[in-house]
Image (tube, rainbow, N blue to C red; front, side, top):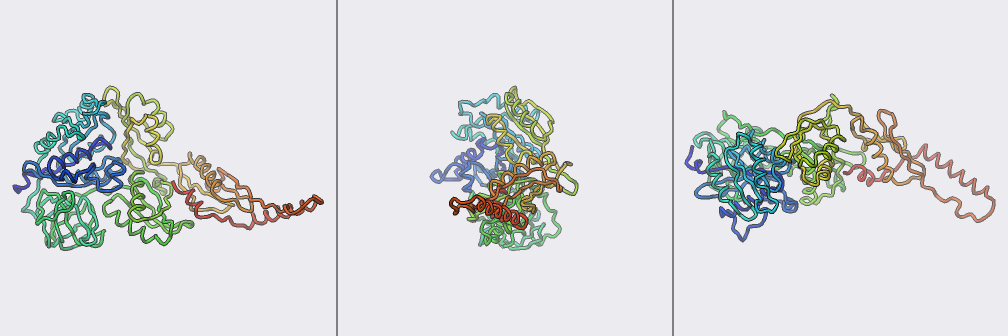
Length: 573
């Protein structure tokens, strides 16, 4: 082990969303002098415009600080359930984690989920209670919840801080130095570097964010990507300040970047191991389990000639978002597009916003859905954990009783806070369950979920017929017991969006040829007798009969013209 490693501490901050993680990171940057005070602003490590706007961390962000001769490498991580994959990648590159808990809210669902991830990596956990300056802070209660959560595993008293005021931030730094071990690994061994993130630079090619596990690397070294077998010459190595800062060399234990010069994004994958190209017998590092998309939606450019731009944009976004997946798709009404896979609804929202803002793309986005296994008739299920005050248990149980969820357990985290565990079909919670949960709990409940595989389901294909003609663009897979409700809702929506024709149009929802719902668009009626003044009514009657026969003929031979905006309104979420 090199002497430099003795003074390195690699750590991340994990918490539930809005518990003050980014604010604590700001105070650490200030106290260590990493960022000048005149340049400092709130959420300094949240580089994206969307992060600043929404007040949440979306992308992990590394930064190197120095304090009392120690090198402290912090990887700031997201707190939202949709970005837990970002957290898992951060945890694999560090030895310790600061677990931050809001004193006014206590333990929340994502606190629990992120703690489990950290414990799986055998990281040293430093518990910290934040926002002790608030009038509604419940410090003792929060301490008891942490004690209950850790049990015998609690090896130190939680540090009480106010990240906003800067209270006791030095104690957090001292605990990081004292409690978190120095990184293992040997500088004498051949290079092994774990890629935990990446981005693309027009001049430097793919820039890999790495944790150097063994050996060292410098500019002009010949390196090999072990998974893709791509070989290249290093253009530059450096550290995060948090901006990229070139250095002469990166050694075992350090966190930094390698500018690879590679132009093909797929050649430098997150989770891959970088080694020197001369070392052919190296053992690859464990890497990461590929994230499994949970929510799917189709994206189509409104202007068809923007298809290639959409494709390029998705390729670039996937470079530093390995959880994003996409495949080519085409629609009879909307042309060429892509079916995208996401970790959740917020993930979908962030990607669609980035495509609009960063690439100026106007998109049609279809209703989100889950992916079914049709060969075995199975659907995805998740383990759902909900933390809430006991007083809201009744309304929540009523909400869950209206879904197909299965009760598992109830656990008391404190005298009046409980942890409910359910197994649930993913389809029940991806659209508006979170909003309903917040509504029935007056905003106090929080939730986290993780996939537990697929289970048998009675699924049917819901077809939509318009004037007797089946339109695949509107077809969808639904659970059998919810098919009628879904069918009624869709035909009603289509009735409201399809313009009237010169003949009446039947809109039907069908399962295997059996009609389960129907709406009728009344014919647009032209006034064929308006020019007549007085006279015998027989003449008017003849004209109306002629019109009636004409409509009947059109109904038999006519084809309903469905404008593109109908597909857009009916399919978009």
